[in-house]
Structures are given as C-alpha cells and as structure tokens.
Image (cartoon, rainbow, N blue to C red; front, side, top):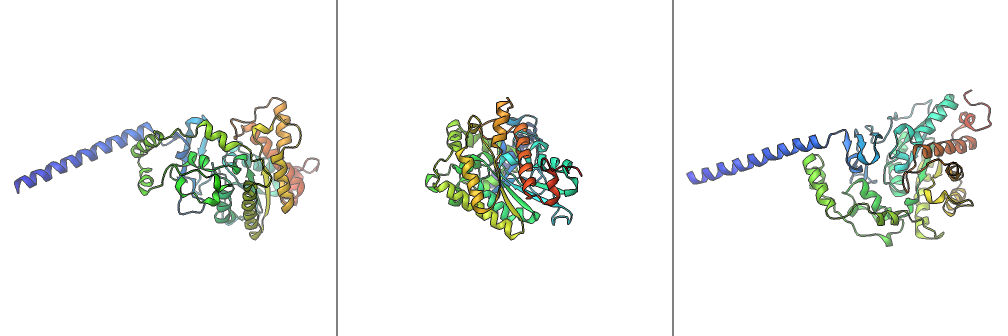
Length: 373
C-alpha cells in the first residue's frame, strides 16, 4: 500500500511539473506573439464548419501582418473589416453590399483605402443627401462560391438596395491555394461545388480536427502546430501561385459556366431581397500592357449583358494610369491604394450614371452639375 501511495505521489508530481512547464511555455509564447500582431493571415481568420461559407474573419481580431507592414486590420464584431452597420437598415439609408475577396477586404492597405470605403467616402462628399452606406463583406481568399453562400446567409440581412460582387481572375482557378492561405483547417472539407473545375481538384493537404481547433486558443499550441505543418510543405510556393493565376481562356469551359451559375445564385438572392445586382470586373496586372479589348473583361461584360446586370470595367482607367507611371498592384492580384481608388472612382461613375445607386446619387455622375447639391 505504501508503495502504491508513493507511486501515486510521484505521478502527481510529474503531472504537476508538466502542467507548470506548459503554463510557463504558454506565458512565454504569449509574450513572443503579442495579441496586436499576426505572423500570417491565419491570425485574422477562423474555421467555421457550421456555416456554408466554411471560414471567415475572426470577430474582434485586430493587428498588423508582418507581410503587409503598417496596415492595421480591425475586424468588427460582425466579422468584417470596417464599421458595423445597423440591422435592420435605417429607413433613410441606401445600402450597397460589396461581396468579394482580399481585394475588397483591402489586403495590405488601410481600411479607409479599400475601394468600398473610398466609394462611400466619395459618395458622401458628392451627394450627401443620398445617404448611401457601403457595407464591405470582403473576405480574403473567397471565390464566387463562398461569396454566394455568404450573401445568402448573411449579406441579405443588411437589406441592400444593390449587391456589388467583385471579380478577381483567381475566381476561376483551384481555390485551395487561397483557402489554405487563410486557414489550415479547411482543405479536406471543401465541397466540389467550390471548385470551378472539380476534375482538376487536388487532394487535401490537411484534415481538420477538433484538437487543432481547440489548439488555436493556446499560443503555445498554435506555435507548435504551425511549425509542424510548415515542416510538411512549402506553403504558397511560386508554382502554386502561377497555377492559381493562369487566366482561363476557354469561352465554353466549365470554369466560366461555374462562375455564371454562382453569379446567378447571388443575383437571385439579391432580387428576392428587392435589391439590384452588379459586377465589378477587377483587372489584374497581366492586362495592363494591352491596348485592345481584353478577353476576360469581354466575357464578364457579355455575361452581365446577357442577364441585365450592371457591370463596371475599370481596365481602361487602369491602363491609362499604368501608362502614366502609377504603381497599381502589389503582386499578381492585390491593388495598391492608388489601384483601389481608381476602382472606386470607376464604380461610382458607372453606377451613379446608370441610376443603380438611386436617383439622388445621379448627382455624382460626371457632368450632372448637381454634385453636392
């Protein structure tokens, strides 16, 4: 009996020692990784297997990413960047809900420089009487599948008058590269519907687990997890980036049919909510050197015409600014603050002049003579 008590005492001491070591390690990890900064995009996102869109921005997250310098990312309690917007919508407000990816989110720029906020600011200066709010629901890494799911389950609750979906060229490619950049807990749960061409789908690299989910609450565990996962693969390498940005040239390929189906889902959801639908065909760097019509933009504009949607094509304005020496992109996808501003200006011009923002907003149309009146 005495030997058993001694064994139990020693075991308890070992357990207590291990717990004390873990507590000290956790304290050290929290000092090494301050809450106001993130080493990577995953610090801003959370896995949401309970929602159709699978992952999103983490409510209340705030900090800077080491990869993007001084840009501050502040996520509101609704899980989006920028100010919260009242639900239900105030009776006097006109609302534009922007659905998109890291471009709309404003990767590597301040929130005030992302095109949804620039659009709202310009509208407020030109036609304050219009009372237009622009709700930015952009989430990094999303494609048209996530966007459709988010719009149907969350976006419509903002009671938009207009839904503006932002296109990016990587919408047409394998989304797993971009999904993985936001969260490692996702790949084995992505449904085929999220793939523009499921026949090209690659096998999942990591399986989600509850243990890994609980691990995210511990800085020590999260550090160990990330080191372990990073040792298994070279993350987001150049080959994957190239694969994820190659334009889809086939006019009748499955990728374009998939995109049309997802946009039809969003347009239908908008219509049921009494809102209009519009497409922003965001350019990408490889298009800037051209002069004539661009096949990707032409397909998007034709798609919009076929279904009666408003379409914004900022490519001509981007080409003019590029020719004048303006730096418009940070990498293969993400615009600088200058690129974001041009996109906002073109969006305002097209949507205000076409009446998509309402009659009061026509004062923001160039040549109207009523701006600010």
